Length: 384
Ligand SMILES: [Zn+2]
Image (tube, rainbow, N blue to C red; front, side):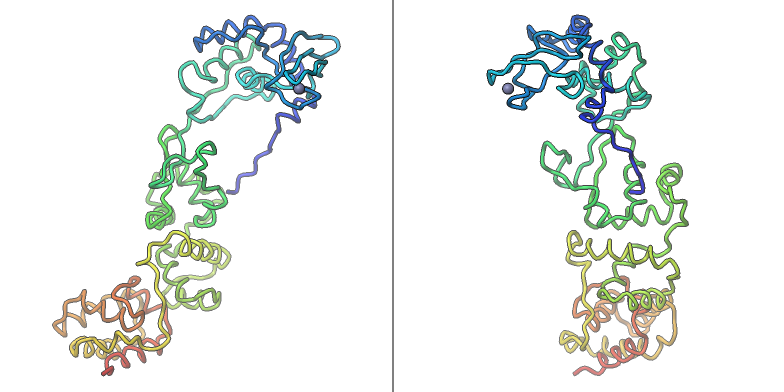
């Protein structure tokens, strides 16, 4: 994603003693914390509750121990465990603060001023609400500015969450979307609105919306951390070119050049070609996929004589026209020959793909070797 976080692990921080002061304060102010928890969440803490959970040195569990006392000088807590073991656990690494205390303690330890968190922590009386008061009243530290975010939904499946097991990892998303576009998908949404990730056809529109800078200006700006110029080749056209090239990188570049695109940003083109390749394998609807036939498809023999005649006309007129000009020419020829343009487009696709549909015809034909195109059109026009 181009974001390089520094990861701090809580167990490491505990072992290093970074939580030591916060742990002592919590143990000393146990009753005040219990009162805050009750006032904010409405729930009384169980009798004998302790803000520090000791880890049993015999069985290794934390949810079976009960803290019975502590020694501030020795920096230990005494505990008994359901397994029958009892002893002293060090405050450094011998256990951890209960989540609702750990979180505000962490704000002070790490000087947190801005805290984004999932909506599950944001309910009234939830852990942000109790954390805010514990932070301010127990630790004397102003609670960080909260930003509550929603989940990412996978189209048609629901919220992605580790607890539901419905997860598409960032890496899997990056397999099909360039990083700047994935950043844009996240940033363009308000945090409190859920994000719909649709890996099907709408993914192409998302990429094009980013490339063509059609979205909200600030979101686009924030997504482009590499400050790169927008990518010029429409993603939809990449889907066509990749299927023509069939993993041949030189042919991919040639196909793109033929349809009038600049291929100097080769690394980016190859990155997107990989995205497209995986997208075709995993998510593309069947009608987007095609295969260029090496021989004239047998379906071409069933074309009407008018259609064949029009294909011959197209072969003679195509010359060295550009992609857009070829597209216009197809309409022109259809009209001159008195053919329904939709029918004629189908005849073109049948001649090359053996199917009635295909990618945007002008750009598709322009991507191919021109002699091959002329040859194939003539062949189709003569098919008996
Ligand atoms: Zn135990």
